[in-house]
Amino acid sequence: MSTTADTMFGDGRSTPRPYATATGELVDRELILKFMTAACFWLVFAPTVGAIVAIKFNYYDFLGHISWLTWGRLRPVHVMGVVFGGFSTAVIGLTYYIVPRLCGVPMYKEKWGHSIFWLWNVFLTIGFISLALGYNSGIEAGEFPLWVSIPVEIVLCMLVIQVVGTIKLRTEPRLYVTLWYLTAAYIWTAMNYAFGHFILPFSMPGVNNAAMHGLYIHYVVGLWITPAGLGVAYYFLPLAAKRPLYSHKLSLVGFWALAFFYPFVGTHHYIYSPIPYWTQTIAIVASMMLIIPVWTVVQNFYGTFVGAWSRFQESFPAKFIVIGALYYFVGCFQGSTEALREMQRLTHFTDFVIGHSHLTVFGTFVIWATAGMYWVTPRLAGRELYSKSCAQWHYWLTVVGFSIMAFDLTIQGLMQGTMLQAGADFVDSMAAMKPYWLVRTLAGITMDIGAALGFWNLYMTINHGEVIPIPAATPVNYLPEPKWS
Amino acid sequence: MSDDDNHSESITRYEGPGIEERHGIIPTWLAVVYTVMFVWMIWYTVVYWTDKG
Image (tube, rainbow over all chains, first blue to last red; front, side):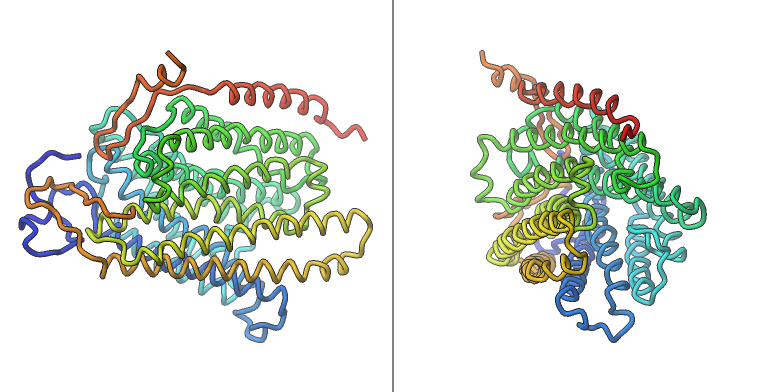
């Protein structure tokens, strides 16, 4: 932290201007809080679309007479909304907080941040409208049409330049694990996004396209969501626990094991397909070997919290990090074993897969990004959380709703798979799933209500939380210590 | 001195965010997992390289 004697707002705190940006500050408060606000919006919008999509499983006529509200149009809005709208907007905002603080210098090309904010959010909005209108490139998780993909790719390249440029100019000699993950995530994603949006839809017909699509979609998960989410979580983990990170060695093992094994897992979506058998075997082996980085990360996380479990009571970021690590362990073990041929035979074409994807993308990485938002928002706003009870409701409705949903989808998948293996008619197996779909919808709505309360609360914190008194002579980069984060 | 005491000796501090990290250890149980997984990887790759059925 800087030791300069400048005060945060240059006025000795006579006037509370909680998120004014002072000259010489390491981070751009206004920019980050704009990203947090946008992330709050997308993190309510995308799961709500998911709830509407879920309702259609039980009431297939629900909103079905309006073309842009049909299942086929809304499902990509939900998927792209969670991945690029909610999760990515939060991560980009947190990147503008984390990278300068770890490097000891302001973000390289700092002024780009505001252009990136507007480009990102305006084109996401255009993208979701385009998807609802039926303009879809046809590549799952890479569905934005060209007029959205091009600006998004430009944003990703700008972010790569900013992150790498900041690291190059850093004054902190060591690179903390978070910087490895974030750098890798942005570089990999700038390449993968171009692959999924500019190459795949226009080349490689047939089975080759399917094989490559398997790689693309898993690179979105494994080379963007996973490293970006882990980068964020590793940053806030020791801060939330108020303890040193358990093991630098384990961080190394986790990062390099992910980097080595993840690029090969994509074909596990096409077991028993015409894709060569040995490539399927490599994908299965790589998927199982992901047990190494996952268990390593979980040990590092819980090892850090040993002796600091009281923080679970005191800190919302700590709560979200701890529960996210549990979902990470469960969801990733499910994903690894799901790749095995016998498990694929049982679970393919069932909601077991949907349970797994929700456990990892939402249960783990959105929840870790949420932890970061709870840490950063009150500090940069200079205000206490607007409502502690709303934050509690956010946490517990998420945990209860999401746990029921994940368990329900997993059991449902195993039930349907067993029925199909026993020779049941496919339509009969679908009819038997109706009660499970109802539970999934109700559980999903529960967690959506939690999310709405929580992100409304964070939004209100920025503008209406109680101002935290700050001593007169504080350093320029001083951050207050809010009560519950 | 126990393993825990040893590995807590070396702590790096990142001044900007105030984060500290231990040099740390790889716990024995994880080293066993790494070994088992490595052996399994070799076995599965060799046995299932082609579809013999």
